[in-house]
Picture 1 (cartoon, helix red, strand yellow):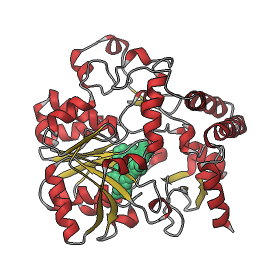
Picture 2 (cartoon, helix red, strand yellow):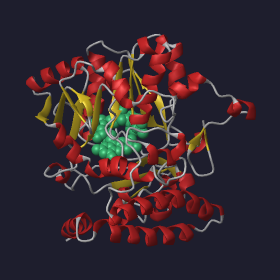
Picture 3 (cartoon, protein in one colour):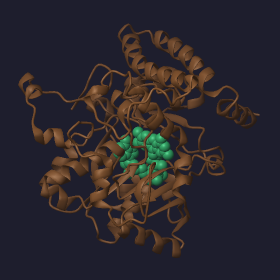
Length: 429
Ligand SMILES: Cc1cc2nc3c(=O)[nH]c(=O)nc-3n(C[C@H](O)[C@H](O)[C@H](O)COP(=O)(O)OP(=O)(O)OC[C@H]3O[C@@H](n4cnc5c(N)ncnc54)[C@H](O)[C@@H]3O)c2cc1C
């Protein structure tokens, strides 16, 4: 897997390798026509769960809250639950290591900021905490798992967790060595160019970036006002609110990977437990971070119940509908929006989804939003690449500001956008 000119990871090999079509590959690629879908995988793995709904799939229990013990919450992007579950599985001797995404030590030499690795202690797990909206890939860590006997948990976004299950179905070695999967809810994946765009907008050379924090945590500011922070090689630190970035509105879809246009899984429906942010009040105003978690594994449910009783976790049981509500925008994009894109978007004929094509249900305004988002994703990748080539950031930034304004006009009217703006002005005041 190598970065292409748009900052997306792509397979790279000799021509003959691309021409080879194997049935095995068809069955293991999460976006392929021939692969089992999320419902089928979940039915095999979670036949005994108590609940099921259209948004979350099968699940045993759902929670809102955060980790109460140690510094999991402080170090996590949200409530610290992903790192806690990984650490608890290790403490209980149920796994030997966790495959998750950590920062690259020497990003400028290695030409990437993050990669998958295996952590084998609580300290290592915590060092890898936080969300990375950056292209990563599993091949190296799967090789490590193949070559190093032991039991591992894999942390990943929904398509990665699905890929792991498809691999487990094909290969008994992975079935035995990966007993647990920890899923992250996912809105979409960004390209590597998002970091370069941060650098342009913070007025620093991207060749000097040493560390990237997409969501620097300010406990006294609302959790949903993201702040991006870059640490440079000379120790300098710069930061900016996403609110002030031309491409900082997550919903507008800047730098989105094209495959995300065809994803229908928001909450990692095939994972033993999946985690997101509680994007509803009062939680989204709490800068310390609050998780929602959807539990499917009965064993993990037992660990969680015990830790709640011991006051190591501060979690309340909630309904599936509550969790779905925290991800309302994600579900619109990946259900109604996907059904609409399946009637016109390029690449639609190469995939098979759980929602049927439908151009009738969305209102004309929603159709315009889905179209605008689609074109922002497509053209942000291309225009950034051109601006980078001609070394003129303003070509991209002026374009981005213009299309973001169009998108805001369409998507928010007097709704969410003006509410966030009002809160931001209050904060500054
Ligand atoms: C691309 C992406 C999109 C997301 N979209 C949404 C969304 O729309 N809605 C929502 O509620 N939540 C979303 N999340 C999840 C959210 O950002 C938090 O990761 C989640 O709430 C867990 O927070 P935490 O404090 O429990 O995790 P932490 O304790 O901070 O641990 C996070 C764990 O995830 C691992 N990790 C980080 N980035 C990646 C990655 N790219 N791939 C695999 N593992 C990774 C880390 O190594 C760490 O082990 C997204 C995450 C990603 C990476």
